[in-house]
Length: 214
Ligand code: Z5A
Image (cartoon, rainbow, N blue to C red; front, side, top):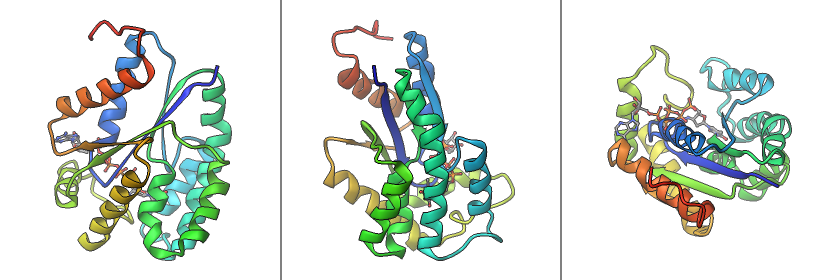
């Protein structure tokens, strides 16, 4: 039985990692097998590429260079982690995936070229469900700054205009694929966002199984 592939997308500080953790705990409490992973990253090679891309000194401004690096990391991640987990029947929760390339690199290169690179990286794999955690970038950046670790990465250093464009692109992606995307108001409190996500997952994948209203 193939598992279920769920991705979490959105701008900086939207609460993706927080909600991935919460949903994983909930699903595990139902006795389900869950694989939690993230992009860029998820394998030793992809984590090494992550380090290169997010280190400001090493980063390239060129959209195609960035997209190729994200795609190389993603291909390793898909082949070594995501596909095997799905084949084993796991629910895979991934913090960012190919839609992040569309949103972040999309303004820096032609769309047809971007989609070619994305197709190579994903190996044709598409999420079954994508949560777009949406909020104004000012709010997300403030949240991210409040847990500041001392070093800003390549994208955190981008100007507000760039982050607004990223949000616009995410919203356009969600509008274009309403069957896959669920738009979530990520400015609501953590528990409210978690409850919305829980109810969507339950309705889509657990209908008739009864989750005990936990
Ligand atoms: N990138 C790309 O350009 N192309 C690609 O193809 C891919 C990625 C895959 C990855 O950095 C960067 O790579 C990313 C896009 C680019 N750059 N940006 N910007 P990352 O993974 O390190 O960054 P991130 O994905 O933005 O992670 P993040 O900043 O940690 O955001 P988050 O996961 O959405 O948020 P969080 O860690 O769950 O929460 C942030 C803080 O807010 C934390 O203190 C929480 O306790 C708090 N929080 C969470 N939820 C709430 C609510 N609801 N209310 C109030 N406070 C909250």
